[in-house]
Image (cartoon, rainbow, N blue to C red; front, side):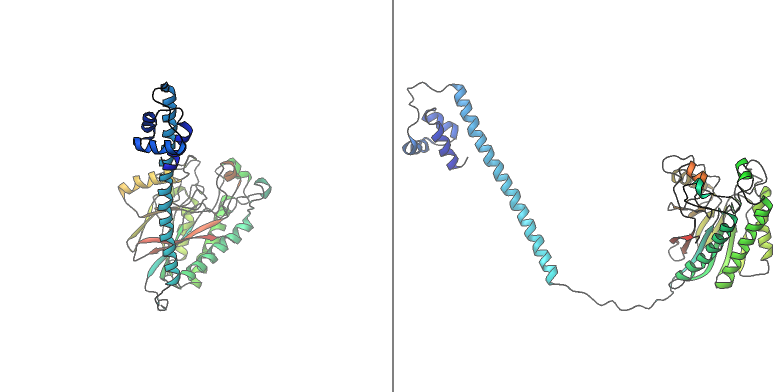
Length: 386
């Protein structure tokens, strides 16, 4: 308690307490009380009735509150002082930075293609003969065979644009094209029989024509060699249910890929890989890519989307034959999971996507690079279909 507060307390309570009681409450020496008596008047005489314990307790509590208030104020003052010191130091640093701006010269470095990479394009899920009526999906999309042709052409045009853009700073001599399947919808479901513009054979012929046109475009306008890795989807099958051991032998797409390989057999700039099994492995300068259509991944619409089931599947497959990256389609959504890339679609948003509450996405495919030095996938970009 400060002297001023002690005096005030004495002035208000000296007629209630004796001098010894007052000294005890204030925690001061008797001579201090005598000084206060000279200034404010004498304390209650000792021969008079002593104050009741209740009165003394009340006085002590009052004095304690003043003392506690004093301590709290001292703490606040210390906090404010510390804060003031901190602000002063920050202001000093700011003023120093403001007054001492320095730099060093960075010499101009001409762009040199001292790094190299392989370009990769994921192309899948066209479903060229399936109709998407705009009034069925809130006018978010429309799809016909005519629109499919325009979008398929745009895919290859935009692959070349991305390729040429990357080649301005990175040496790229090879393009790997993954044809991941589902270029047609087929008539495997009753609904598809009612909602397609072409019969299955006519549709696969049209898909083949579009793929040949696109590959010819890349061969003509780029200087890269092409490796084309081909996978059958689950829609182009000739059986009612998907088969495992004999899936390729019942796929119209597998037959189409064989035709493509035969068509380009004399062109040394293009090479086809057509696996009989579900997986294919591509070693790009030590970076291994495992490719597949994606229908072996079981996704039930749970929390986390396709990420959790995909991570689990990759972990199991890596026990047999490890890979650095998985690429697949099937789910019509562009997702980068770090160790996997899921491709988008050309058909885009449709009635099925609306019914399962899938994310709305623009029709797009996927482009990326494999950095030879770092052995990493880099520069992942959408290949838009317009």
